[in-house]
Image 1 (cartoon, rainbow, N blue to C red):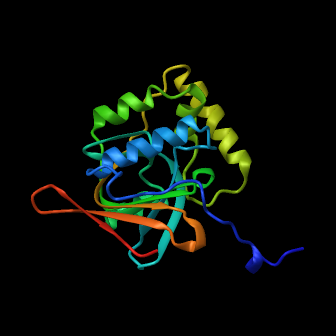
Image 2: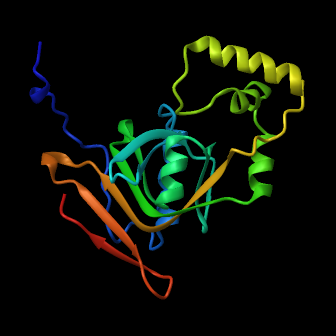
Length: 212
């Protein structure tokens, strides 16, 4: 049995060159995301969200991207969860996509804001019924006595709302507005390709290569 220190992989699938990459990071991200989807990697829409609490302790969790455009990256969650509370106190956060099979990582940093009520309502009502009931049933991040609490809550709200649960006031979307992107492509001999895009005062993007 190998020790964990002996686990190694040679990255040789692709390369990331400044001249071949997009000048705007959103277009580069869209290309890579679509390639991940078409390659059928597991959950290409999964991203790690990092926040920092008032105690300055960082925390991470995996959430799912639900939209993106020039305004930023969108996901939905419980506003009263740990991440929601931390974002209320410190709106700066980071996202990371890791497409292992493609040997690629995308890192995104910026400030986070809530999406509009209309956006949250529209997405909530597009979800499966069980997921809409689940948004009511789970007091996310709170200590509960057991799974029975969730099942009891789900049964209660299903009976209360039937087929038309409204969006809970404590549930909705966030949008991270990027000011820094990094694209990492694994390369042989650990000489990886790493491009950083930094938002400039005029709204343009400065593209630079970083040492791996």
